[in-house]
Amino acid sequence: MTAIPRPVILFGGRPAQREEWGAAIRAGARASGVAMDLRMAPEDVDPAEVDAVVYNPEGPIQDFAPFTNLRAALNMWAGVEKVVGNQTLKAPLTRMVEPGLTEGMTDWVVAHATRLHAGIDRHLHLAPGQWPQWHPPLARERRVGVLGLGELGADAARMLAALRFDVAGWSRRPKTVEGVTCLHGEDGLREILSRSEILVLLLPSTPATENLLDAETLALLPKGAAILNPGRGPLIDEAALIAALDSGQLSHATLDVFRIEPLPEDHPFWAHPRVTITPHIASVTRSSTAATALVEQIGRLSRGEPLLHVVDRAQGY
Ligand code: NAP
Image (cartoon, rainbow, N blue to C red):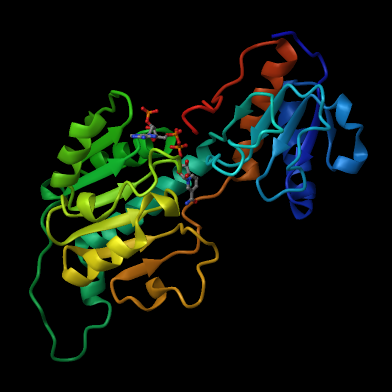
């Protein structure tokens, strides 16, 4: 890669994000001594001058064709399914990896796994005269599975293991995560499903992961298992999920992501007694921590070093 001493960076976030992100990126650049010419709106720059776009799937830049000298598109999100197939983008695409996004996701996973493990809902509405004696198993006796052992899945799995849950994880390629039984491939999928009383989905949305949880795979889970999906909606066959909840095969599904967002008002998930909906808030890219990650990528461009977290467009993540 050729070094570009002062790359022209175009911020492609939503207009409402410009002030906050502009300040955060400039502060990060000052702190780490990275030189850049940061432009905050497409109208501020000749597209042919732009070296890198900070890309937001909900932002104004979706056609990369005018950016004839583009060296990189730096996605503001971890998920890349909305851009990975964009034929106008010829430059390398990176996905967002930053500690705020990771820690926020782990907080969400731990909170919702613990709710189910500890049976918190059993005691939320106790009436006078009710004194049910129910004790959850110890965390060490609770088997949790995490599908996806990437930046987010591995951190969540590690934290669950630190809380003494009996944790297994599953990825495409073999992995090692301390304290976690790591599985991969087809056999690994069957194994992790058959042991997981609480199953967390932290896979990307790709052709290979679409409907990974369908009637057949849901049937492999222990009866009464629960699912947490902060990954992506298409990972689950919705009709199969509802059937598994209705039959008691699943006891609960906590869903943060959906095929259509916001979730349509007439969607059966809203009224289902065993579904908890969170509105795609499991985590978020935070300017306070993500600006450092963006500045690191821009510094790499300026020094001619390889970018981090480059998306494998053939794999789709
Ligand atoms: P990542 O680092 O790319 O990790 C993806 C993981 O999934 C890797 O372990 C990968 O396996 C595994 N994987 C991918 N395809 C697979 C397949 N066909 N079979 C088995 N394993 C497969 O991604 P990340 O940063 O952890 O993010 C994961 C996802 O979380 C994102 O794509 C996004 O959809 C979602 N997300 C949601 C929110 C929210 O607020 N709800 C926020 C951020 C992200 P290898 O390790 O073998 O490559």
